[in-house]
Amino acid sequence: MSAIDDLPPLREVIRQHALSARKSLGQNFLLDLNLTARIARAAAPLDESTIVEIGPGPGGLTRALLALGARRVIAIEHDERAIPALQDISARYPGRLDIVHGDAMTFDPRPLLDGGKAKIVANLPYNIATQLLIGWLTAEPWPPWYEMMVLMFQREVGERIVARETDEAYGRLGVLANWRAETKILFDIAPSAFVPPPKVTSSVVRLVPRANPLACDRRLLEQVAAAAFGQRRKMLRQSLKSLQADPARLAAAAGVDATRRAETIPISGFVAMARELADIRSEEA
Image (cartoon, rainbow, N blue to C red; front, side, top):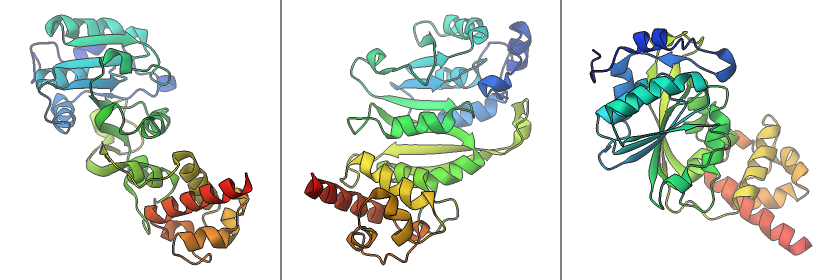
């Protein structure tokens, strides 16, 4: 019996279902149910919540979410070997676990939500974690279909997500994430907690969507950030040339000199440049 329910310990589940972690799927199984419970509690309150979980594997986090009161968990698992283990959990928590055998990169959970909101809680596969996050951050319309994300990343990626101007990790991802959400690293998890242990420390990050992010065209904001950080060691007057717009005019809109570098520009500055770029392209149309 485990610490959170009467199902078998995760190591036994893995042996029973021959769930050796596959590098090709970005799998590193978190077997400490105390840690999975800590991740689940980070998404509190769970009562009456619908949770979308990506890559549940043997179901450690799934079990924690259900044991701690989640009304419903929609678990999206690409690895068919894990489905029987998840079905055992479903039998233990009847009517509360929906198992979707599919690819999270293409599966849209919104039709399963009946127009309601969900929380995304997941120990994301490292090989697709950033792609998934960008997809959720660029969801339209905004505010999105989720009310919170509690996600695990490699520590380096977590630092990029929460970074702001002057932080060493500040870049395109930090601009997008903090423009549309409030972000925070909650805690780290050591490699030894996983099977097999990854070569890096992991971080659990919480992102809460901003109801009213600073107004601008999201695609233009991404273009400006991509240009500026694409040559991050260069001044804006050089790096922004790829936008086919006057870098000095864009920098002036942000209230900065074109000799500044991208890592010193706050998110509000990138938004101002995106708005100015929209005006310039409108004038040229």
